[in-house]
Image 1: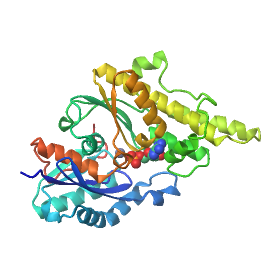
Image 2: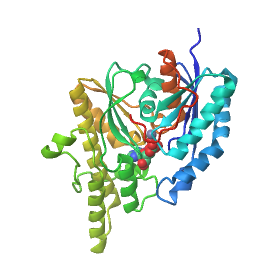
Image 3: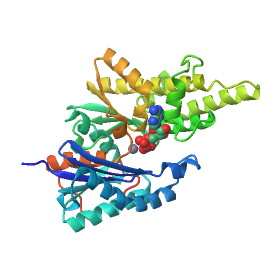
Length: 342
Ligand code: KG4
Ligand code: ZN
């Protein structure tokens, strides 16, 4: 018997994503991004994002179906991100998914965005390990999650108490005069930089902080420290060594992320660490995680960069796991929940 065909819709932030999977096989992953419309504001503008989703939704569904070589009527179930995310943006995706499910007379599955970031790994590496820690690092989140069985959801272990990791990359890039979104530019600039040129602070790593925030992150102090350092240089009329600052900043972020992620695996007794979210594309983060995990007997799983950022495939992947596990679908009056608990 053929595996079920799932169409997934993602609109929690600025990416309109429509993915199609059969079982754990990815057939299409169409993404329309409004990132360029937000670039001149230096961050995502919710109202602009909602409008962009509305315009992109139907063309993106069409494009995904064409790529997968299917007709919408072939779909067995529709999955959609119902939260957390931007309220207006989520509403567009949820409304589209309901319309599709209703017109096709097929079940709908509302899924958690963070759980979907974890589930996407099945498209690359097959079944998830029996237990793993997932570290999700993007412009919107920085979380450590404990995952026993993805169809039961994910359990939060810690998260950022201020800025998300990607947000820190974007803000520091701005200070350094690099374009938005800044993560990839910092990654690139850092390739030719000396990561030991200056030592920036590692948030929430002191013995005292660890007692209360063992698995939490804080990046706002780091961002301020970089900004102060750069300002002082400029005030003295000296050039700012962008490559070195980028490398030293990146080193501080990756050091804290990997340290806490591996500590979380040890705490849970899990031998697998999964990394997702846009920042998972960072070359230094990948290298450092591999190195430190290997030393601790832990295996790192990172989906390819295109699957780490927000997309519809991850939603379809989680929908597929739910269908395959025989889970009950969501009601058709499923709400969008911008502050959905994990
Ligand atoms: O997952 P994503 O596409 O969207 C959400 O924020 O949910 O993540 C985008 C974030 C941005 O902050 C971007 O600067 C960061 O991921 N990013 C990176 C890299 N590529 C993307 N940060 C560091 N290094 C990278 N190579
Ligand atoms: Zn995300």
